[in-house]
Amino acid sequence: MTEQRERALAELGRAGVLAAVSWAWATAARRTAMDYDPATGHDQVWLGLTAHKLFCDRLDRVFHCRRYHVDPDGELVGRDVLGDGLLSGELDAMPSVRPGVVLRADDHSSPGWRVDRWRWLVTSFPYEGVDRISWASKTPTKQRAAGRRPPEDQFTLFTLGESEIDDSVLFIAHAINSDATDSECWLGRPRSTEGGGRPWHWRERLVEPRPREAGRVWPVVGAPTGQRGVSDAEVQLKRVAGTGE
Image (cartoon, rainbow, N blue to C red):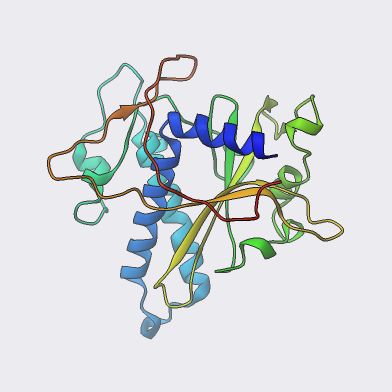
């Protein structure tokens, strides 16, 4: 399983995905914390739902999907559109990923994205409970994805959803604590929790990219699906001991 983890992290890193996801979660969590107001009735449910929706919105922004979509050879979305609703400095910090590198790939009602052979869905979990996720409590779509054996154990890849696209399915799991002062975001390969055991074959914590130096611009990374020769994208990853198999 270590080999698959290293391959996934290397390929997603080169495509600019890891830095982009880290930015998307960091900005979503910050905005959620800023808007959180227990006095007006906000609670943990509001926190979780708001963070999830903002996270998906930020992922669409950085990957140029949905209302931020542009043709790979077309004119880029204006900064006024990309920056609308972001906090000061967040647009400038957004990694640049070429349009068409990452595509929206929902499975039924579950938000998803894909690049080359990798596909990922987004899920939430209770803060500090990443290893206590019960996939049985998730939607049928996520239960089905988590129940798959990894590619090393199964040469015919499982077909996820009605699109019948054979992808290696990962999960991005996110959480925010009860007072919105801390959060976490993980990328991992789900493992069925039927019969007990850990919910991950492997998992990797993603942290926000380092602030860039004044005047320094993020490189545009990646090429539209099907093209090669992309440049490496820097991303910070916090290794968590004992999570690989």
